[in-house]
Length: 142
Image (cartoon, rainbow, N blue to C red):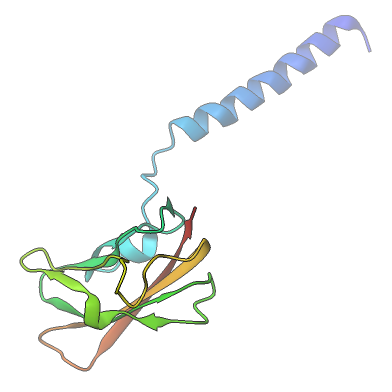
């Protein structure tokens, strides 16, 4: 292959790579979690799916007006196999509909387990008690 063809070929490969990098940097997505953003009951999960957090990280859910938490469990593994029901120790931030659990000494969970953790929030519409929805998410503790 002549030298000029090799240079053109290398230039095209380099241009293609640059386009992938550019597309990743300027993607129009905001990285939002579809199961959160598509559910009108959920404003936010804390921490977000896949986040890397510290062992004392607050875990919880921010619900839309008209919804309430029924149950919050946290598991020390990514498969939600060993759930600890922390609902009795959840702090409710009135007006914001946030339900938050922070590990501390004396709590059911004193610190989050290293590596993957799983949280499951069960919630219901206040106007329709007994009909629950559920969301689960995993995050990593370093």
